[in-house]
Amino acid sequence: MSSATRHRLPLAGVLRLGRPSDIWFKPALSVVVAVAPPNLVLLALGRLDLAMYTMAGSLCALYGHNRPYAARARVLAWVVLGMVGGLAVSLIAASLTGEAVVLVTVGAVMAAVQKTVSDATRLGPPANVVLTFISSASLFAPQTLDQVPGHAALALAAGMWAWLVGMAPGLLRPHGPERRATAQALNAAAGYADTRGTADGHVRTRAASAAAIHAARQSLLARGARPDRTRRALERLLVRAEVALSAPADSDPARLRAWARELRGTGRIPRVESPCASADELPGAEAEPAHPRRPLRHRLAPLAPIALRTAIGCALAGYASLALGVGRPYWALVTAASLYQANVTLTWSRGIQRVVGNVVGVLLFAALTPLAHLHPVALVLCTLALGFGAEALIGRNYWLGSVCVTPMALLITEFARAQNPAELMTQRVADTLVGALVGFVAAVAVTNRRAGDRLEHALTAAEGARERAARLLAEPHPAPRALETARRALAAALVDLRATADSVSGEWWQRALPEERVVLAEQSGHRTLAATVRRQGLAPRARAQDQDENQSEQQGRQRNERQRMQQGTQQGQDQDPGRTTEDIRP
Image (cartoon, rainbow, N blue to C red; front, side, top):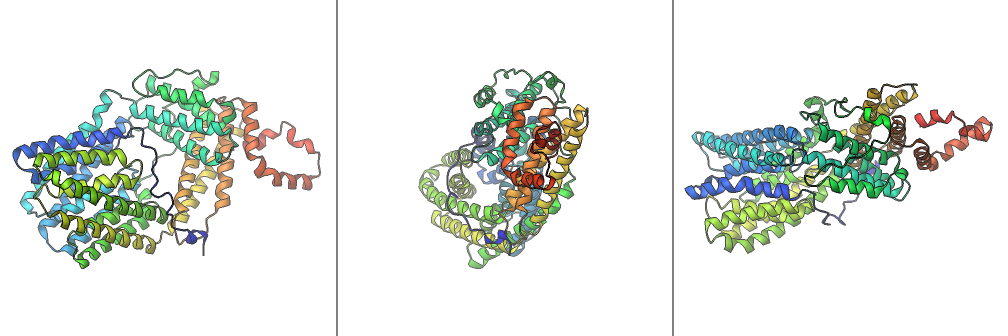
């Protein structure tokens, strides 16, 4: 039995609140601006029963807020098309059959497809959950074939409005996402500089800093983004963050944080001097991407176990709800779909958060129902307020956002007609419990044996990237562009290795993980990464080299002792210029 099979299901910290996102108000305001006009127009026309279809398009405004605007335009367009396509499939199925078992099966297959595609494309929050909520709820909406085109057109029109809402901030802050990503990288680098590379927790802090820097780099290199003065200035700041990652003892955390603060708002980007004269000649945004984008089918293949887990879990949750006679099996289906994360341990945590949030949300619905029933205007305003609250709070913890999402979903069911609140509350709690229990059982039963293979591939990629960078460093005069590309590839591989290791470590029923090999790959990779920064002239060589050697001294002490005993040569051998080779190929 591998070490992964002995994980304990966590309880402590599952409901702990974190810090809100830096831009929590953007998706919160966007959902209000995107939802309000269509709903108010329908209210004025006396057709609030059609709001479910416009909500499908309006909720697309939740996506893409961290992406540069050129990339956001494409992502939002695809989300709108995916939302309308899923809605159309559900409405067609609903018009062709009323057999609940068939509809649940269709919903489960659609949920698996939406989960797989969103993970493969790294769609980002709220990922597949909103898509699955709309498509599964539409399966049980009374429908005829002749109504489908009109209802899909309503969703498409609202989706086009949501696209405009998502792109509108670019008129005021065209480089806002890139500025935020660079600021986050500077703050993360400052956190690592605080550790001086040796304090407790410095390894985890270094990994977080590397991930933030890589994300900022990807933001600056987003497809469709044109090189300009602003991106050049952000590039120079990002170089400073990379220097701090490679030489924390030589970096000033206060200055890094000051630069990060100056990137807020629309003010001028702080001008910084290049670390050395040659830094101005480094390839910037026009350099080759760190990793060529793999074909979609190659990204989908490792996700097959997650897709199967989602399909089976959602189907069984819906069937169980039908067997118990709860009455709204799509709620159980959506609950199961919302659970599935990168591994079983995270799925368990999400299940706890979902159940707690939904139960508290049902209580909030009970308190809001008298107000919402006063007038249709009050009903619309309550849903808008809850939509704002959900997006404002969900970044702190999923359960807290669910406290607002649950009553909002219950109120949306009353757009067509007022319903018995007690019945709605009972059904929602029952479906939540059924969906969470059955969904988690499916996650445990459907094993992900490919998780270990993913880690092996990530290890191989990281080791290969380090070797390529080391070979360039061994050359007397490596080409600057080739060295920069190798550095970026190594940085990306190390970030991917850490993310994959964290993900795989929470998966069950797999062979023992090569934890020691992962640690060694990360240590040697970061040392080589630091060597490339020094070779490019971005960091002071002497102190950076001392810092790098101090980090690896403890891990390499036994190896050096064995070498001395075997060689029996002078003890000062490691002090001569030949040490540069060890620096390059740790």
